[in-house]
Image (cartoon, rainbow, N blue to C red; front, side):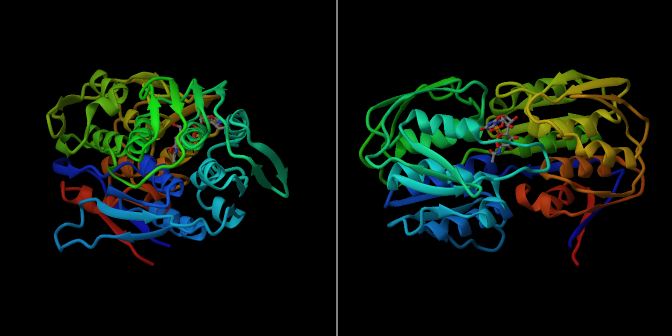
Length: 428
Ligand code: UD1
């Protein structure tokens, strides 16, 4: 299994290109199930999760092809063509859904187009139980009959889905995607209340509109959908990855230096940028990206709680914790979205961080220095927090189980080493 080696202590200076958002790409690829025409996605990141989803979708009958790139263009996004001329299989077995939770989101589109689907329950995962009750509640409100059998969700709508009113008791990104993709082909009007406002939901809705869907309320917590009989193909460029943006911003904040995050959009992560400003990091928004700098000044501690968009994203919580572990004072981070999303705490402690946990809250007492060590990546965002800590730790940090990183961060070693970091991959 590959490992990442980081020798800490280098300031970051230069430019980092920001990739297309993984969390938009996955549901956009799934949206290809809704039409027999070709959906073309541009700015698709080169990630293990994207490759895996393409394989999973192939099982349902989606043909995919990727445009070739010239040498020297490898940091540019890819162009994917996805065509589900015919759905050949409406089942998604455990072996697939287990490997990628987002593949559960095929349920809504399959049900909308084929009026039936059998999709395995995703099961638990490293960051909490992550149930799917909200997905099922939403699809039932659109007229689906749902039964659970042998760990699978069996959903039917013999005469098609019908528009309905869905009020989510709590905000769920995945349930919003699933129900929205079902509602666009349901008969009549649907209202989705307390919908997730994450920019990736808006990106999927914009793409669905290009495909012929009728949706109002994008960016708000109420989505109004007028069902249509069929959708067509479309061209859509995936929006920039706000989590990758925030991660590199925190890396620069940790090491010091000045980096331009090329293609990043500040409006996608304002809450996180505000926290960085509060910590003493210089942030400057330009027409083409975001400049992040910290020169000479120390880091001020912060107090934050994660919350759905537009709040501070849970997907940047681990990275902020790594950063605050070297701040001048005590920070407090409360995780309100996922239980157990503190797996990185023990690993950061191996590098010398001083963090104590009290239920859903972590108290981080800043230390003057971290020291390199062997650490273990536990999930996607946790593993990148270890990279950030490794970049400032004295000596060598070896991060094991980097397949987690490859699921969500495109060419991270290359992007960081181009800015002066000493980081490489030990292939084994
Ligand atoms: C998505 C993101 C993930 C991010 C998360 C929260 C993708 C591929 N993944 O995950 O990176 O961390 O949003 O921003 O986009 N819940 C229920 N019942 C449900 C569904 C969710 O109780 O049916 C709970 C979850 O356990 C969690 C909360 O709702 O506590 C939010 O989860 P959700 O927004 O659904 O996360 P995902 O869509 O899985």
